[in-house]
Length: 395
Image (cartoon, rainbow, N blue to C red; front, side, top):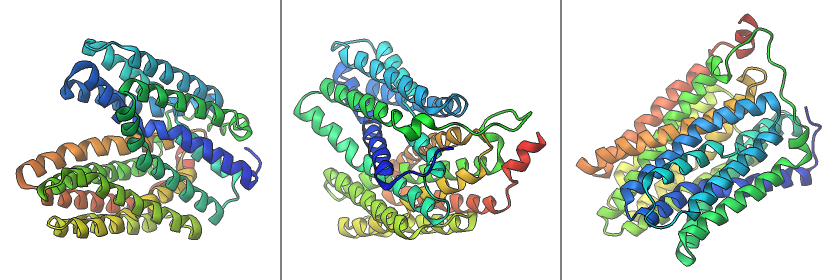
């Protein structure tokens, strides 16, 4: 367990974490654009982007489990080096390259992406005072994570347009490598040691009923995200300006930033009931978008309000995971949450896209709201889920 850190040390740790996660947020766009440049096919590019996402979904929990057993520093550095090498090789492929090496390198890059966010969240209970201060730290972390997803993809698009997809991908790999190593060399990361596992316990974080419930909650939340992204794009197109989708999604992210900033000052819920209330607000807010499809201004206002629930939801879930994950599995548990959101977003995009293709944006927004309601109902189970500590000791 680390000693509590000074404000400047915590800010430095957060800073490295945000810079390291910024390129991670850009990689799906970067790989998509570069694969399209190499093959001339968006279909092939989509396969490469899917391979990246699949690799990250599998690799995140795996690397998190290794970090829980061996410590964070080696896993972070090895992952960053592996991802940077794979991305560098992908960037070096000549135009007209066959799809197989593109997909393989994309998948390897995804598998190796270091779980910087999960590692930071695992560190927080040991470097920040418990109670409201720790809750505010989780909220600040969620807000910083949201910032990477707002600013990252536009930066990748700018680099690809101003220079080339090759240079953009190499720049992302370099930033990922440098910032992750910087994060790994911080004393808090270097000195962090996992809690000992309970004697006789087997399996990872998912043996806890509470962790499984929170993973299911974030799968449903990911469905909200995927469906809304598709629906907003379809709605903007129907209004005559597909380009408006970008600013509208930016407003959505800005709302999340504002919500996260508010929670980071005042603290947020740390119970299943409190999380359910947040998720109910998420569901109602996104379902209300059905009434805005004829006005971009109205859609922007509702998106900002609905987005205000996103970062607080992450902060609440993260605070709960720290207290319910079985001893010695907390980093893996946080990594599973990232995977859950990615899985849900992929499902939400697929179903939302099918609904929007046949009936317009409205049904996709309804689907997003329904997923939010499902997440709220799942969150209520966190009140009565068996304690993971008891579960572990009984194993």
